[in-house]
Length: 503
Image 1 (cartoon, rainbow, N blue to C red):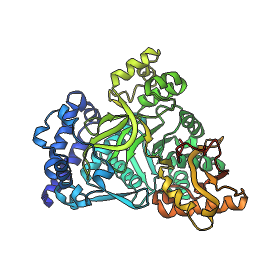
Image 2: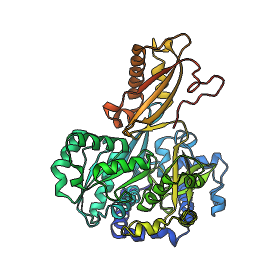
Image 3: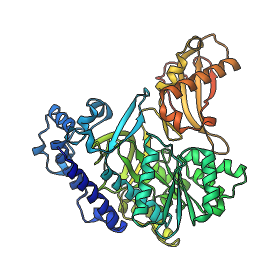
Image 4: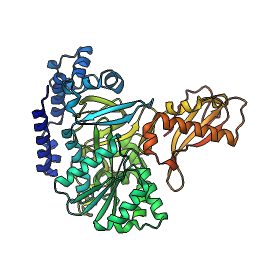
């Protein structure tokens, strides 16, 4: 049992360590430490203090005493949402079976719209604050520039807004000249904040989902806002975007240095921020975007994943059968958790050696721009969820949500139930949600049917998926609907197992 005094000391220790340890020292720890040792120590802690994990290990006939080194660790069963998080009560997933060992709960939507609760404690946020410190220090030089941080993530119980707000405030406590304001995803309030406050600061950082930030920037330009005067920087999460997208948005805010003016976070509701883009990772990704043959050789696919660096002391990654599996301490601590992201890990040295074969030296390139943000941290690349979701304005959209929209009275008479869900971009690189629906045999297409089906899908998406309802701006919520005849060879070939999403 953890008493109140222990809780207090836990907070004091975590905050003191964060405030008094320079970023350089925090990021150097992995060089002098066996990075698997922290994960093994977390395993033994969980095996004694987390009731659910004790039970899970017993069911898998695991005796923790027999698992002492990294080879042993690699034999531990993986955790998933299904075999672990959904099988135990929330209290059992926390240390000592006490939810009160946590002081904050965030929410994410499941595929049925039923929320998943993610408790965490103040101390858990300190590790994540270090990821924000990396971005603000290495990319934005916010240690010496007066900075307005504008939180454009949705506020409320969803994880992004409150977590980001807290971490930015901790940086201010550490001595960074950062001021935080929280308009959330209220567009009018964001415009008001930037125009009335922005000129009091040397730079303005907008933090939000990539398509939402682009919409803010484009709408602002249409209203005559001169973004360039505010030295805009961007912090993003929740979406894979192209380097063409980064360049386009950068041009519109007057970005001078693409490697230093934005950064994307690889984050999850389950465990906060797992890794973050750095000037080095962006420099590398931009090279790979222009050299698809190198990207294919490195990643094994002809699409460009998100590429970030991570601290293996904070979040320990493994790759098992192409899936990213991580271990990390949180309100619900996790060992070898399979988050259903496909991707891989590349050491710092291996990355530089690979690029050298293509005649590219990103370190030398960054040193010409001042040299900030060159850290010998390992890389993780992420292709995204493998369980047929699509990500739109940071909301995970599931085929099951769309299915319900097609099962409503009248509409179900017109359709087979098959559809293809995808997020596409128009010529101006604005994203929209596309749904191609298969008509039932003998049913003819009409504008009335299209509108009725699109409205039904939208109604169910908003009802079932709270992330969609709260993250996606109203003007981007209505799906772009297309109807295709039964057996359409492009979308619904006969005799082939149907896939409901396309990337």
